[in-house]
Image 1 (cartoon, helix red, strand yellow):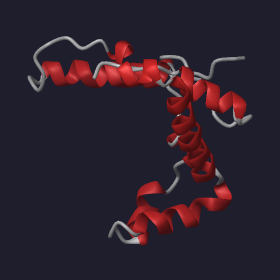
Image 2: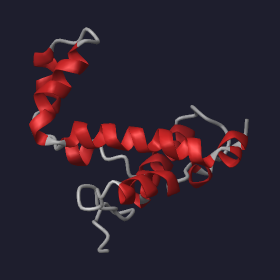
Image 3: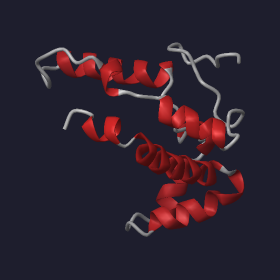
Length: 128
């Protein structure tokens, strides 16, 4: 499949993305941090290890669903490094993989623009 489902059923894609963004909103709420860690601990990783790993991290920033210029640049860098290490052979246009309109629409519909500002490729917030 090369995007046929997305082109044929954009309303379903939006519905799924809306649910994922709602989940990200709940996860990124500071009051839910311990509940999030407890849920993650169900995977078998001790909650203390999860707390230590996340210490000093902003869930709001770290788990932002935005597919902004910073997100794209991080993946471009990863692809470039993987190519330099011989892990991949060809060029990959990361921007062709990414379609931010569904996430952006969900963020707008749910009124979460202030929670997750967009960042430019240099990791600076974009003024809106």
